[in-house]
Length: 299
Length: 133
Image (cartoon, each protein chain N blue to C red):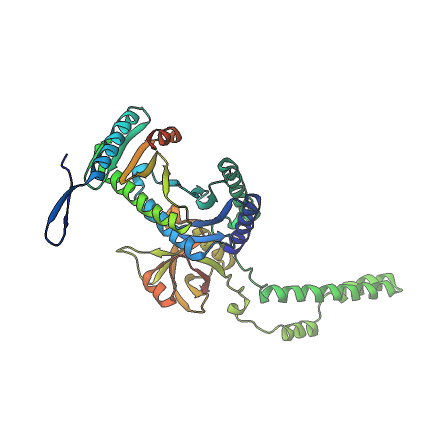
């Protein structure tokens, strides 16, 4: 799912919650330490500090079976950080807020919106990815043109056939007319220039993925890892072609070409991520959580 | 218990004053321990940690996890003070952490930092009432 779609849907939901509960002073949603959405009144610095505080607790919460919810009750209000579908919703409410009403609203509305957004984009629901459709190949265009010419020729043939007075002549001539003459064949050959195989290949599909760290002793520093499904998609487009490398481009315009392999770890599959070794991240001046454009390089 | 003493030096004479608050603190701590010991008897409560600057009382079902519980409750109190400051919540009355298996109720009463650990289905609101002054 593209981040913008989530952000828009969740931000609108948070605004609605605030409108429905005036005692809710601040709401925001984060995932994996990154802000996904926040209402307009909430300061980004405050959100980041809260995430840092939450992460510090979560790191030490193995003893209680990993952290799901934190509720801080203060003299003037309450902060609640609750886990919903891998997202963490933070709600800050005053002491006058109807806790049950706020909880019911947030715990029903937010998961519904998340599910709805996922349903609207089922193919890319988990991977925060959008794929730009490749433009039609030159080969396809040539075929289409040829089909159009053939259709025009057929029409001319029919007209000739209709106007013919002699039936025998009509049928014989009509058949003859549809068959291309030597001259026509020569013309067609001249009209269709020889096209290099590479030019006939479709444009590489560009996929937006989120950077995830890739580390370890045996990890080659020149190879990134992408989803098997994405590789399968590329292989389908470029059947028979060798795909060994990808071009990666950051939003700042930094690009690099490197080898790729499928993601091995099932927990990283289908998440719309590209696992990049630190060395390549440095080259690209990117870090975990940032978006990059990835496209295959056709050998 | 050893009484804390504070010495106040003036120009010529030294006056030794008994720290009256110390007695009160000790009393609060003792009351808390008694309260928590009662709460601990409940089946759903898996343990508690209460500590102040000079003393600590710990009763856990799984003593081998003492360090983990202690670090968690300490981190929770520190982190949430920060959260409280960020959102101007005022004095933190209680913090409830819900994990997949256990939930923890943390609070500060006077100078005493308390962490009570219980099963997910335990009535934490009732426990909070019983501990709160």
